[in-house]
Amino acid sequence: MDASMINKIQKAKEYAQQPQRATFNSLTVEFRGDNSTYNVTMSNDGWSCSCSGFQKYAICPHIMSIEKLFKPLLKREPVPYAPGQNIVSDVKKAKRYSDEIDRIRILSFDCSFEGYNRTHQVTYDNGIWTSTASFFQQRGVCSHTMALEKILKGFVQPIRAEPVA
Image (cartoon, rainbow, N blue to C red):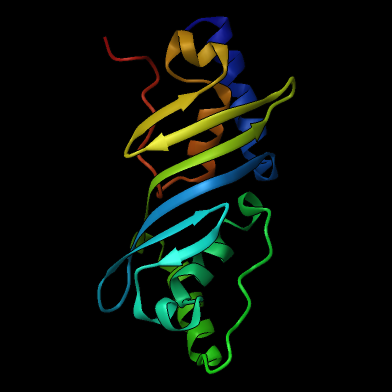
């Protein structure tokens, strides 16, 4: 391991302690609920979930738990409760879901990451990471992707330290 990689690893540790540097622009999650597996997405247009609760109320425990887990990276107001929604039950379920992180797997995201020198775009798509950082272009990994891997540990597939030939 050379000095530049050691420097990037150290910077990644610092960045990981500051998750507010990252902002999800879009997010797609597979969510194993109590009854089925749902797809939850977040984009500029807002949230969506394939569950029946979302179809009826435009909010559900799946979204509520993701809002709680990834709050520093979302930079948006939580979805408001809906008239007729069973708020007590949904909040209780969302709390339980956010404690059971093995239910959630991030499938993809697009993220803006504020580095020390400039903001970079980082994407993740089913285990494939990309970054606009020049170090990533050379090595297939950078301080931004390593920091996000630490922040999102358990929700994403690990980054390979060196690019595959």
